[in-house]
Image (cartoon, rainbow, N blue to C red; front, side, top):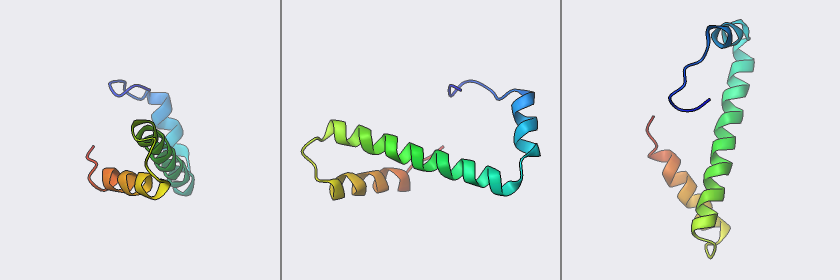
Length: 67
């Protein structure tokens, strides 16, 4: 889904029927996927940075992220 798209009633029904533990696992997976994508972006912008600096920048970005 794109940022301006809305979930369908069917998607909401599927999520509501899911046990809380499963929804939490899905959210956790999305979180870690987002961090990996952001780290890849930081690496592509700063190919000379060591991994610890990339990780520090990703941490900083996520710490100050807003929805």
